[in-house]
Length: 399
Image 1: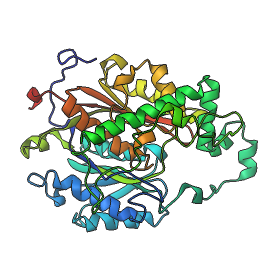
Image 2: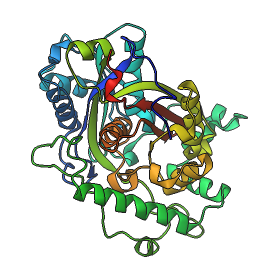
Image 3: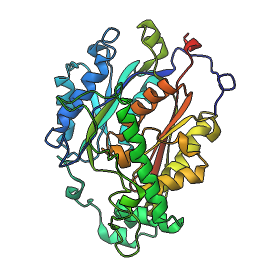
């Protein structure tokens, strides 16, 4: 793991820092506590909560841009997100845009704001994400508008972009010889860790309530390898190993991250939760899209001049136990450093919000544990991986 001397960097005025990171509770789609809450309300709650954390140092009008990740909303979703911003008392003078890089949309939104700060376009911005998989379920997604005759004759893997995500999970399990027991063990551990974190109230600092909903409702503390073994494979009933129990949950939720230059944070006397150090997106074959983190994480670490051994905590999205477990093994990461508060199998995966949610969980967790470097990563549908490196600095790193 990292030492404070080996990787100590001289603080710079235009370092991109995070001063607030929050999320709503994550609740099961269609049958959870947020199933009837519109995505605009989820997002408005996250935006308000994010700014409320720093209300003595930042006015809503100080924000210079907002980027929101979302995957499933129709084109009218752009209007609903702008409406959410305004209903959160962020004035119309503050612009907003949306982004969609599928499961990494929330992380991409934060990266877009970080990039804008790094090049000097803005000094303060919010990146975040929202998804209501109750309002906009995945099974309602229309087929893409393409020339099917061309795509079917393409020598590349164009048609593989349409492979159902569960089948890509089975492809990873088959290709890398993962057993059903391995997958169920990984999944059970996710619930155990998340249940412990909830019982110890470790999510308190990152969660902003939506009305009277204050807690995640997908965590099942009684989950065991034995109980998961009773579930039938969903995508390949005869030979498969991917089940509802070792896959991420369909979820409703939102998250928001406030970023600014170090100079702005110091001027406003705001505590710095973390420093944005690097971000990388890579492409992988669509039929095994789940391997994305195993390629993206090394790329992001190289940008930050770090190694796997330097990282204290990895937040790797658990789209499926197959791909998450394989990536952890492939990268040689010790299990105690991965998703210490559980992951998407227990907490849920609101597609457009997950990346921002992971940042909130990572930074608040490392702030308690004393960790120095953390990584957020996920696989991306159609064949990609995304990863970011963040640093929680020692107290003496102010300018």
